[in-house]
Image (cartoon, rainbow, N blue to C red):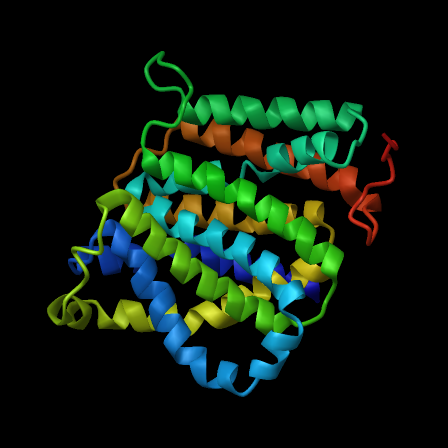
Length: 298
């Protein structure tokens, strides 16, 4: 059931760029799409939060860090969807096999096994192909690219933390995810503009109200389908199942937009997905301590 849940959630995330682009086309500035989305979602679940305030106070240690990491990840990801090509944002976010492998080696002192070498080579190759442009350096070319890369790193760390904590306080973690995503989105606005100028007016919100409603209403259940499975499935398996989003997102963007999706993008996507497959096979023996079976003590 958790595997099915996260695959369904990933499919919906793969289509999330559609209402986000719709909100932007209604006149909302790219950096304000995040605050609008997460702010509307927060208002919807606020009554439920008020009935569970005691849980937040009593268990803040268990919900603060996962909420901060996951919320930051998706705030950056939402921003990347409107600041760079949809395909690039999705593929750069799903460099998580690279991050999880490097984190395992550097933080958990795991061995650099053959599977890890293969995963790293595939991930780096996919990253190179996606980023290289007309013989230029394979580096992110705009803020959207950087946000997508950083969001994938934040999510990799968050998924490890969620797995270590286990399936408890799920609702509280989901709501903290949205709250921290709202705060991070506002910080991105301040970072970009230096102030909160450009805040959407009533006319903009009225024009895109149906997109805002769709995203706000779907945020809580889709986030639940992402956070809950991450508490009971290993981070590697979570990363693999979330790659359903790559397939749905890339396919829908290729069909519904005029963004380029040629051999280079297809090859990069194939390599990144392959890295995810290698990583999840490596982590099949990942235990509840968050340390894989090939862990080597320092």
